[in-house]
Amino acid sequence: MNKPIVATGTGKRILRIVGIAGELADAMDNISLSLSIQAGYFSGQYCR
Image (cartoon, rainbow, N blue to C red; front, side, top):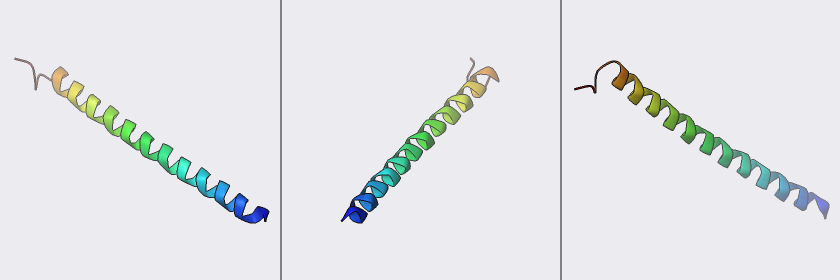
């Protein structure tokens, strides 16, 4: 009877890790976008 509980717990942990990885990917995208925008400002691309 314990095996299904272990499998369920493992599945929940995997889904949690996948969710965290997705959040990390989103954060990295936001950082990359922010750095690209800053690089544009500092290179004069957006300066008037």
